[in-house]
Every structure is written in C-alpha cells, then in structure tokens.
Length: 198
Image 1: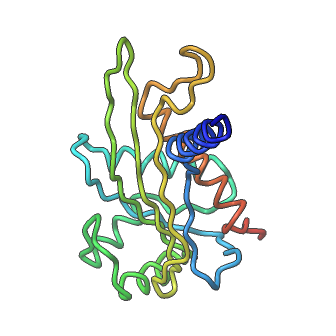
Image 2: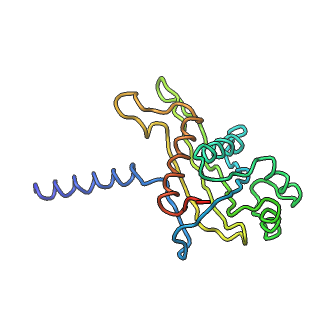
Image 3: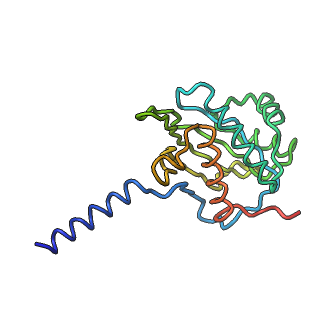
C-alpha cells in the first residue's frame, strides 16, 4: 500500500511539473538546418489575433528594439520594410510571395525575414495586482526564397517569474515582452542563429 501511495504521489508530482513548467520558448527548425549565419535581417509587422489595442505594433517595436540592443545584427528600419510592403501590396499578416522576397533582397540586401503572430495578450487582475499574459509565434525565413528556417512559440505570464512572495513578478506587458524576447534570442543564438562576423 505504501508503495502504491508513493508511486501515485510521484506520478502526480511529475504531472504537475510537466503541466505547469513546460519548456519555453520552443524552437522548431528545418531538419537540414544546423546554424544559419545572419548579418542583415528585416522584421515584418506582427499580425495580431488578440483584441488588445495596437498589440501587434506594440510587440513588433519591442522586438526590433531587443534585436538592435544586441548590437550583433544589421536590422532594417521599419520605414524601409513598410516601403517594400507597400510596393508589393503586402498587408500585415499576409504570407509574402516570392516576388516580395526578391524585392526585399534586391532593395535591402537582407539574409532573413522575421514574421510574428500575437496569439494571446492580456492583463488579468488577480487579487491586488495586475498580471500580464502573452503568447506569440515567430517565423524566420530565408530571404532568398521564403523557406521557413525555424519558428518559435513562446508563452508566459508575469507570475512565472515570481521568486519569493511578490518579488520577481512582472506587472507590465512591456517588461514581460522584453523579457520573453530576450529568452527567444538567447535560445536562437544557442541553437540556430550564428552570429555575423564581418
């Protein structure tokens, strides 16, 4: 009986750890990809599936800021990206065709194009505090042909970072997004993204 209770407790604890402590961010890469060297990249405006006002634009600009902050990549300006999108009649959220990739390589000389999709973005009032929640997909495509090199799914709540009592909890979407994008870029640089050496 004690053995059964012990096994049941062990299984239940394992289930809780698996269910609550999933590993994020999750990177899915093409089988042939080892590491991709990227010197210059363009980020397309993120598509927003949530009802959060201007959520896609909000995250898009934070992500670009985090890329620039690393000082490892040449990131094309938002204005240059939008100019090519207007020329190619491409709306945010639409999948770019081959013509778009040919135009962006010819005009801007990029190695990779990043697209994003915001799937959850909200601020939840819990007791006496506000807890932000965020989930998004990012896709990195080869600028020469539009082939998906890797994609990443990331989901977090500000509560995830709690250490002791209320310490460590993230209370704003801005801080949560910045933290999550740092985690994504750390994972990319470890697994799939080779730093550009000029």
